[in-house]
Image 1 (cartoon, rainbow, N blue to C red):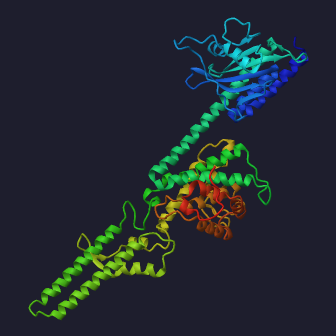
Image 2 (image 1 turned 90 degrees about the vertical axis):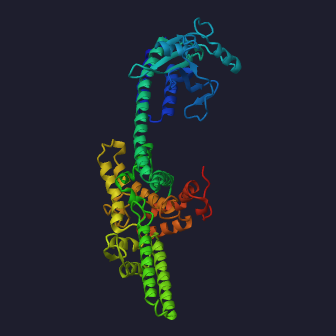
Length: 539
């Protein structure tokens, strides 16, 4: 007979357990806590927690514990459970009422067995084999179904061998044990269902984010990898800072909620690119829009060559009657010189059309000269400059392939990102996502965009993402306008960014000191890019 004091103590335990279960976010740890709590509150030596399989046809072992045999499988132990699932129906489709756990699930009924060896109606042959193999004596069983808010059975809690607290002997589970176990099972089912619903919503939410990134990827194959790699690198930096125990960042600590918030921000950091025109994102050459207009320029050169040839032939025809060999030779010489000059200018413009890191002022002026000194008759028969003002502007781009206007279009993606994210009703644990995601183009010296924030005005997480975004862009192999930069060159540029106030110096120190750049390189860079020693091999 349970004492009143013992019942009150166990009721208090039950209340405390219920509160603890509702706070647990990890499914495996939650399942483990449910079984351990049930064993504790009923003084059971062992137990098993089953869950209904996805197809609803069987019970799957999730957690197994037997204290006296020192058995702990599943959950957070890292030790897998190899027992086969328990079918709820036989091959003929009839209910499997001979297995006590299956019976409890099928009939939504608690089963309290005083001694498995003498109990009629259930098949405990598997239990006997286990006992023979281990020397254990399975005796009392308490099997309780877990039912969710929709009145669906989601699992079964089974406890084995209640231990008398004074004698230490195995005894049947009491009526009080059963009521406490049923109460705990009810609370556990609610906690488990809530956690599953939250997990499903999180999975759905992340799937929508991936859908946005897929849309960006489908628009441009050159940005899809970026959307995947920046979150990865951001989290690598964050974990490195979290592990730092000295220096100015030693106090930074992340909870699981903090990690999830930063992960989501990383995944959404470029969502505004869905608004960016494809021809700007994919602009591989200076004259590219929907197609590379350098071929139009090529055609004009062919027109100039044709005109030069026609002019030379006319001059030669004018000399036919005089048969001036020297004059004809001079005409051919001038014609060949003009063809050579035109071909040279053509090759120069084709070379200028490819984005470079720094185009000289002399080359820029030569583009302008070529564009204005030649005249050609367009399709309407009107004499026009060889290059339009737009073509001259594009071919004279000093660095890269984008004009100032196009850079502004590209840069607008971060404004669009912030606008999009600020429209969402973020829950409390994700309220910082817009700030984290929207700050990766800001600079420590206040010269970034879109808000011109300084280091002190930015969160550490946004500054982490800024480093990740830059380093990924420098080393990316899938850009249309450049090859992946070698690691040493990228790190040299990052060091300059550190010195000139572009990126956070303390974060970059951790990035270097803890070898984050090397770990990232081993996972995502081509072997030919890795020209620095001590790069870690991927896990």
